[in-house]
Length: 160
Image (cartoon, rainbow, N blue to C red; front, side, top):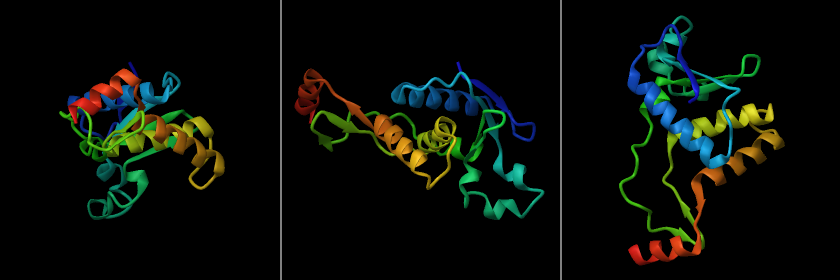
């Protein structure tokens, strides 16, 4: 289990923690990442930034509204707004876009936020730095493209 807590200004809605835990587990498993050194903090971006600006109008316009990494404390903050945008599990086994030996999963906003913040932790780098960009691309490919064995590929092709 990941170390997840709520920011003091956030509503402690149990479903947020459950959704976040499920997505963290899925992302970490797919990219082979151990999050034991990270503390996850759920925050409400509107109340978090409310003292600075009319946040109800501007929240959702910046990446920090969805998540950010605090290097000094090894905390990844994920907003309730990002959690609310989580995709429900797909009922279909696979989409019809099958590449040789791989399957691309549907885009998932919350997974993208987690991949971004985990990559900051892994690299200690920021957007636009080669080390960060390279690792983010690697994490993205590991998460979205799942290797299929030949027997699984035959099953998928038959189902399509």
